[in-house]
Length: 490
Ligand code: ADP
Image: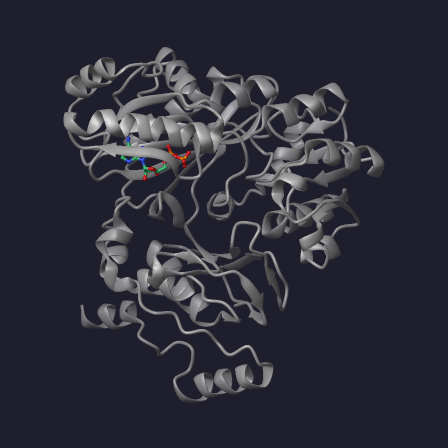
C-alpha cells in the first residue's frame, strides 16, 4: 500500500496498452513483459521499459511466474497489474507478490481462491443469501448421486467442472440414460484441461440471458456496484458483443441484483474491481454463476456509462485509498455497446484466423472508442487469443449507440485476416438486436448473420484502391443500414 510509481503489466495486447494509458495519465511508469513472439508488438513499444520473459508459448512466458517475478524485481516495479487471462486469477501470483512486498493490483490470494473454485463459490453464495442455479452443493462422486440430483431439479442439467473457465468444462445432459457417459467424459475432460476432475451438477436454464454486475470494493469494507452489463451474445459460451445497461433491466431488478452482487463481493472480503456473473431466466429470476476476480474484457462499456476509469480506480484501491463515492452518488449515463473484433472466421464456426494484419485503420468519431492490440499493422500470433480489438460506442440511448456502432464498424478497415467485424455489423442491423430479443442462444438462432467474410487484399496499393472505390461509390454509411431503413419505415 502507499503511492505506486511503477507498474509492471503482466499481460500483452490491447489490455496491456489500455492499462499503460492510464499509467501515463496518472504519471506512473509502466513496464511491459513480452514473449519472443511479441518482440515488435505495440505494447512493448509503448511501455517505458520492457523485459522478455520467455519463448512464444504462454507457459514459457506470460504464464512463467518465476520469470515475471524476476522482471518485477529487475525493473524496480512497486506494483503489478495482471490484466485478464494469463496469471490474473492465479492465487499463487497474488500470494508471491504479497510475500515479496509487491502490490498486486487485484484482490487477495484468499479471495481469488474462494471464488476460483465454482463449487466452493456456490457454497459461499448460499450462505450469503445470493441465489445460485439449483444443483449440487459439493462434487458429484458417484452415478446414483448424480441421477438423484438431476431427478430432483429436472433435466436437462449441466455437468460442470469446478475448475472450469473460458467456456470450457461444461456438458449438457438431457436424460438419465446419458448421465453415466456424460459424467465420465466431463471428469476426464476436466482432469486433462484443468488438472482437477471435480464435477458438480447444475440445472440447465433453457433460454437465459447473461447479466453481470461490476463491483468495486476498497480495503475498508466499502463496496459499490457500477451497474450491469448484458453479455448474452456468445459463441462457444464466450462473449462477443456486450452492452451496458442491459436492455431488459428494470430499476427493481437492478436494485435486487446489485445488492446481491455487493453481498457476493463482501462474502470473500473482496478488494478492487470484480464481476459477479448471473444468469437471468424468462421470469426474471436471477442466479449467481461465478465471480471473475479481475478486470473484464468488456469493462469499457461500464466506463462509458459511469464516466469512471476502472484501471485508475483499481490503482487507487491498491494504494490503500477509500472509495471516493457511495452507491447513491452513482448514476447511469446513456448506453454503451462493445463489439469484439477477433481474427476468426464466423462462417466457419468462428475458427481462429491468425496472421498478419497488413492494414489497420480504426474509426474515429463522437462516442467511439477502439481499444486495439496493434497500431497501423501487426501480427495476430497463433499462440494467443486472436482478439484484434474492441470497438466501443456510447450514445444517449441504445439506438444512438447502435447507430454509432454501425458507422464505426463500416469505417473500420482491417486487411490480411478474416474478422468478426462484418458479423458484428449484421448483428447491429438485425431486428433481433434492435428489439433486444436476446438470450445466450442468439448466435445459434441467427445463422443468417454468419455470412462469408471478405478479406481485404494484403497489398497496400490494392487496399487503397478498394477503400477509394468504397468511399466514392457507396460511401461508408449507405451500405445496408437496416436500422435507418426500418426507422424511416415506421
Ligand atoms: P466460464 O467460466 O467457462 O466462462 P460460466 O460458468 O461463466 O463459464 O458460463 C459461461 C456461459 O455458459 C454462460 O454465459 C452461459 O451462456 C452458459 N451457461 C453456464 N451455466 C449455465 C446454465 N446453468 N444454464 C444454461 N447456460 C449456462
